[in-house]
Image 1: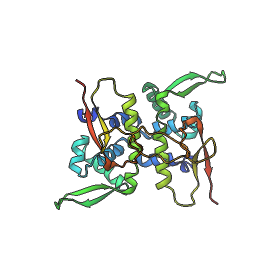
Image 2: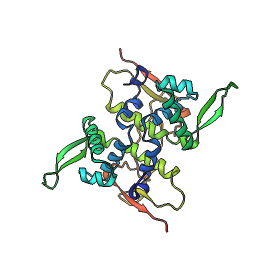
Image 3: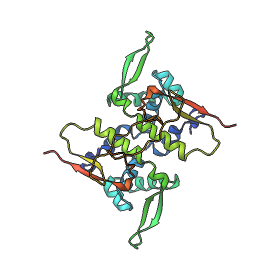
Image 4: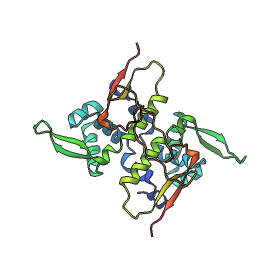
Length: 146
Length: 146
């Protein structure tokens, strides 16, 4: 449970759902087009009971929904909702941070490219007028509704 | 340990460090200017041994470094490195996702504003030419070095 201070923090609330390595790995795979339990299980190398519990949490939190298989078979598929798709910038942020700091020169790695085979722009925090912002340029305030 | 498939995925590697709720909560607080163990412990409401272990991991991973206290006292301070500061867009992504999906209308919440008291631009994944990209516009490829 979050205390009062963290209860009004959107980062703390987001991490109640996303502050788990496997939740974000499942979403990564969903962005890559994986939809079936067996595909996810194989790609993640994760115990079935853990995968099942994480999928259940992501469905309950509204990020994935279960649908009949697109090929008419008896399998269920896990499909991203709009709320789940909105996690995309976070996964891209993790990817770009990992690319920059966690690979030695010359190590093989996967890269995400757009539909023109071009690498993506690096995510940047910006003011509404386009200025790049760092942590020291920002501060918190509380929006209270009474 | 990551299997071969995930070993070359920057998201998977990033989540070995950041796939933990408390690691990201500590970084959130560091972005807000908190530097001391006692400040972090109070703000997070976290058991001291858990906070100590997470801080140790963040120092070992190169995101924080320990420095003598800025006021000359005997306390140590935890200061973000460049690698730690580069997590800022990820925390902003979590914040904006939380703001959008996890608060009811009228709930009090904290908001991040820039030095002109303006809310930030919403993070967007973009191609190098500026086009907005969704997950379906992107695909993975592997960069191999031989």
